Length: 183
Image (cartoon, rainbow, N blue to C red; front, side, top):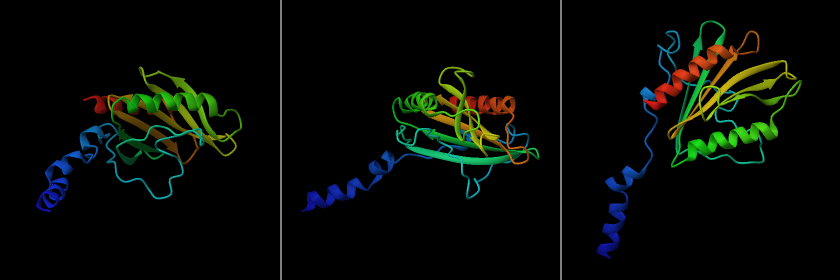
């Protein structure tokens, strides 16, 4: 009985605490210097766009161990969302591979709503640029997703005035996010 009690106590002690995933550190996330001085904060309730996209609803994608999401205003027009997710093993690369395959299979175009692929490996290997289209395809948010080591970094940009995104600025922010994840 004593051995069983000791076993239970040790399973909830320091060794078990070391096995729990740690959060995503601040240094990995976009900083005010990256965002034109804007301080990132929590994502508002009711955001309809996924920050870990899965274009084909019937096909699962690899899930992270832990993730963290923040948002910030960029000037008066754009809202930037960042999700950093940590995976075990080759999970980050597997997610981007699955995302690319799903964009190819389930991507939309023209006047449809959904995810529309734009470019693969445009910022280096394991990167993808795509749009989330809505309002019969007339409006969109821009996404860049990238695998960097054990992390997947997703940066999304929305424009509440025009319903579009500045893809050049988005790529610059995604590059900054990738550099932070690689450091």
